[in-house]
Amino acid sequence: MKHVAEMASSSPSLYRRLHDVFTKTPKPHFQTAKDINLKEIQSLVHKFKQSSNNPKFRQHFTNYESFIRQLIRTHQFSAIENVIQHQKIYPDIKNERFVVRFIWLYGKAGMFDHAQKLFDEMPHLKCERTVMSFNALLAAAVNSNKYDNITEIFKELPGKLAIEPDIFSYNTMIKAFCNMGSLDSLVPIMDKMKKSGVDPCVITFNTLLDGFYKNNRFSEAENIWTWMENTEVIPNVRSYNSRLRGLVENNHVLEAEKLFEEMKKKGVKPDTHSHNAMITAYAKDGNLELAKSWYAKLGESGCLPDHVTFSLLIPLARDKDDPDFAYELCKKCIDLRRNVYTFTMQRVIDMLVTKSMIKEAKELVELGRNCSFRYRLEIPNDLSFSLNCNL
Image 1 (cartoon, rainbow, N blue to C red):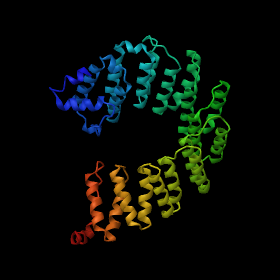
Image 2: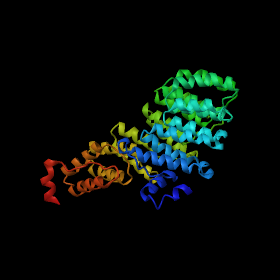
Image 3: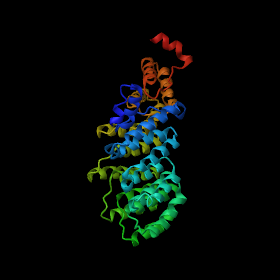
Image 4: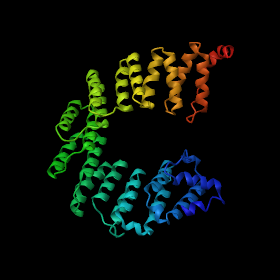
């Protein structure tokens, strides 16, 4: 970090930007690709490469992840390649863990060809390839949506490189097929996994549950749940959430309520997603009172509502003509900086004005103007006279 500190006196603005990039919790400063100044990017890349000279800096993956994510968001792919190529000058490049981080980051950037090339170069870089880097390449293919490549990699590379796929390898393959909706292709993968003596873990089951429930293959998903119950794998909150959503989607609401209570009895604490599943059940039926009761339970459990919670409840409160609850939800949504459609909030503003709740309508407009998302809320023009008379 010495190189970064040396810049503080000569370029305070640039230092602040770099400080944001290099800290563990960076504040985004590039909002869109249009906001980017090419010379500024080049300068930041240069300074980052200077900081890479410090061995202690190179030890922390978060330094690379934070900066590369900034470049990904602003579509600076040549800069990403520039930064990663530069790392080959350091002796750390002989360390597989060091290389794996860059294969993974290439994947997050959707630059699979670069990830593949780096993997192929590892012997030349005098870096051993094990199942760790193999798994990183599989993950890069999934993150880059290169599903044809992942099948080929899994089929050919283990034999060529004398690598035995592990549970992470199989979980990545299962995720890939679930993402594609190719659930029938999972059968040979699961058979191969069994023959290799690799036992499924909770991540395996969670991925399968998500895949089958989301693809409306309810009975098969229920069979997977039974399979998990018959193993030594203990379901976690993600497991329960997948099943809750599946039960709700298939209108088994009473079973979903029983499952919600069951998870609590088994010591699995429901989270926001668990409550959202139950809110969804009653929002689908237009039952505002029961949806409100589950919203109350969410707060009582110490969970915070997310954008899904508000996207379900605000329109429901509006449609069921409950201005007080709609107003409360909108205030909470803005306070928590949860992003929902401006149109949704504007409909609440309109309702408040028609209900002569002018003070509340004006408050939401002001909050919307001042919040980070900059909701463009306004009082309806045809009611502006009424507003002015009541202020």
